[in-house]
Length: 75
Ligand SMILES: [Zn+2]
Image 1: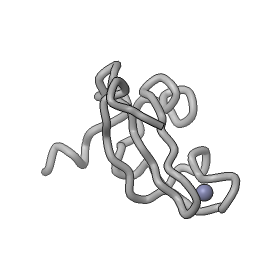
Image 2 (image 1 turned 90 degrees about the horizontal axis):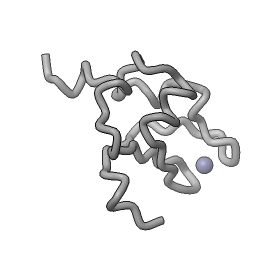
Image 3 (image 1 turned 30 degrees about the vertical axis):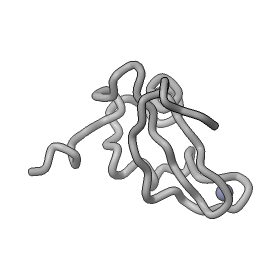
Image 4 (image 1 turned 135 degrees about the vertical axis):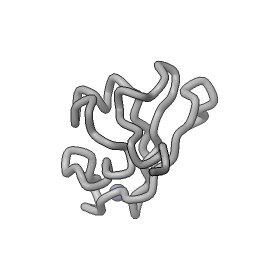
């Protein structure tokens, strides 16, 4: 199985973040933020299914996210 499909919140490096786009914006979640919201054992490729992360403005689930290094963020 592709490692990407078993990658969980706990596997993120401390300086990595997940960017989740929805219909109105892109939000960035750090590892500790994700752990607090959905837990450490959630697989990243399923994280868009978690209602805790759905956008409160447009109501869209963020199905396609990507990883980034927190230090590289320019928001
Ligand atoms: Zn939105």
